[in-house]
Length: 248
Image 1 (cartoon, rainbow, N blue to C red):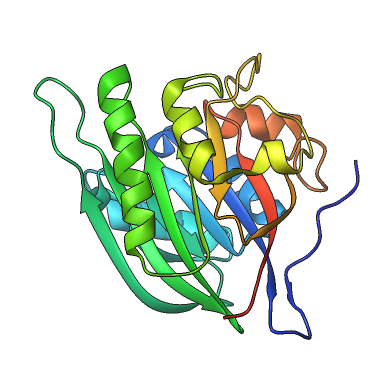
Image 2 (image 1 turned 30 degrees about the horizontal axis):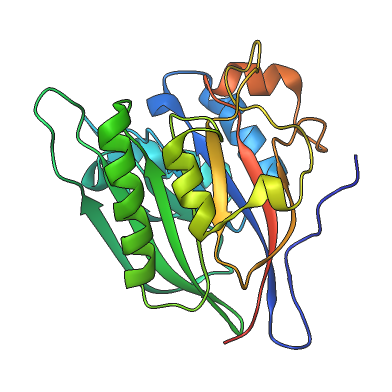
């Protein structure tokens, strides 16, 4: 497997970024294995789902970030689970955690969002974990597109646990307005659930049309990422993308 490009700033001011999306199951599994996987992927941004939400949740998320040589950008309990971690390479312009409308009897959902700069590249970022309910999930897909547009950046990315395969109508709704990064430039392996027997892709990273996708997929076989750690870290496999974000 060819390695993904390393993070760097290009002479024209554009930035090559590594973005990881990962459902961490509230850190209920092997957090040391989880940190090793994240660190080996060398991400600039980590779009987290199922971050800790209860007792001492900030401390737990901060420990994970520190172990992976990252910092907390936003999210966690304040976004009902989604969070964003980043490297010190990121210059943060603003953040906002958004709680979505609550459907009685269903789990509260939210978005963690931010606007960041990497050298000359300005980027909107959104982490999500969509509903298990088909109708609510479709509505949340529309809210995601609206929220991403409301960030006011020319270039943006969104990623997370969609609880739906690519042939589902919410997934197709997102892919109609954004690039499905796996479909644009497949790399690694595709399926994200479950680690012991991955048979479906329900986690994804999307990017606006102006972002160049250099590769995207589950980092199986990536240097430093072992099958044992992937199996021990969470009940989902992560998605890693390398993106070139234009300056501006």
